[in-house]
Image (cartoon, rainbow, N blue to C red; front, side):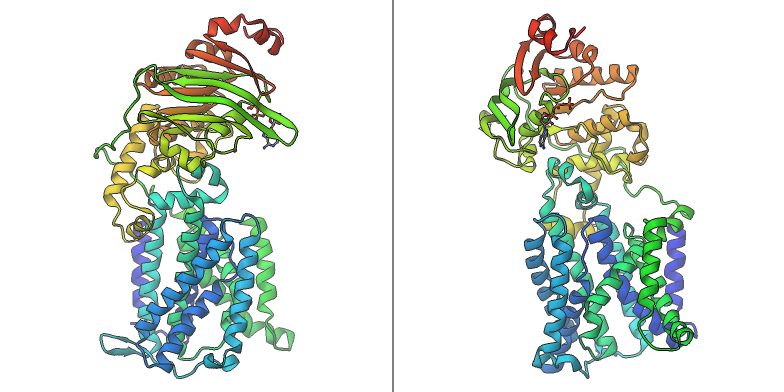
Length: 593
Ligand SMILES: Nc1ncnc2c1ncn2[C@@H]1O[C@H](COP(=O)(O)OP(=O)(O)OP(=O)(O)O)[C@@H](O)[C@H]1O
């Protein structure tokens, strides 16, 4: 992928040096401005799964702030940029904090409301010149030289576009980036790995707004005049079109989409009025049709086709050696690590878990078994904080004390050392096996939340990446998937994906591992290898709580069993005791053998 990239950069650099007509330079400048906004939407919508119609309002905020400060107070456009960034970040933070914790359509609706209100605000404030806007905006000075011509502006715009592309790309291939890639549809898994998904959503919302603000700043000083029209809802929708047409999941899709739509719009605006014999924004109709076709035929946008021609090398490569992460102290074998005390969960009138009571000790594998619908997965979800208890208590050993963990979120619980896999595998299919597993080490990063984002964008996270990817590699090799490290996770067989989830959970450095049907979909040899791995973990002092339907597998592996039926514990003991318990034989209608 490197060569086409260098060729692209060389071609872009040559454009203003060659006798390219001024008209094309102007068009290229617009493409660059749109690409900055679309890039934010790739991060927010394509990768993060959050739709915003209000990006044009953030563009307006960047444009108006600098236009006003530079014309009214004669301040430098660079100060205007700084002020625009601060105001945009504050506005995006506020809107983000209100809308991000809400699910569903609140964000798109919120951004529409925000986009409309800012548009009318621009048009109605006297000091912003109402609908006439602000004129005579100064040029941007660079080392005392004013950037006046289209060609000079081209240099500045495209330099910033390329820097933004690399910053977003670096971000996506980092610890916070993996968390961002988990947001779309896999928030539950991300939270179970310790990711604060609400904060991550707010962070990408603010980043996307800042890219829009940068575009607005460049626009104001290129046009040297601003009025509300380009910052309305229509433009907000066009930005979304660009991201989706190009390929909302890829940074280069933003560039491709803004190029295609700018060129298409330019041509349609010339051709359509001639064809139809009257003026009007007919190109919007064509865009609408194009969008429907694209969503039906090529959801990943045009970039997906380009990518097929230039397959990229895996972005994250695990080092052969790196410092090993510090591990949590293991508990002495036999000490109680988990206590479930009269745990009850009701869904309306249904008692899914009925005053369950059991414990797990250090260096012990406990099997939680029972017929379908007995409440095993619900019990797991109670222990890991995915569901709140109706009554009762769950305690977990942190250091020397048993701490109550019910009432805490799954993000907090994993910090104490409880890691899990899921009954229905939850991974990021288009991300490599290695990166999926590295997501498990999210809490073991070297940088804080904001510092982590900033460091990733400027590649200041090299040592963190080395350490985390090495840890992911170690865990993958430990579970026997080392040879599939660079494969896309979605290409693995279901059984292998379950093992991948175990490696990911091990990356959390747990003292208690909760495995939900890990052997489902595994072949005989794979099951044996899994049993060996779990026995090895037990010997190292790990505690394991396992839900499994494969009785041969469970009976030969576990130290103790807890049997559930209709949410209630009907038996507990060593496998051979439980095997002959009449209550258990009854529950399984014919016995476990
Ligand atoms: N979110 C929910 N809302 C309402 N009822 C639920 C919910 N989750 C589970 N249940 C019900 O709670 C009971 C226990 O379900 P659970 O999935 O915990 O059983 P299980 O033992 O894990 O079953 P299986 O072995 O089939 O996975 C079932 O009757 C199920 O329909």
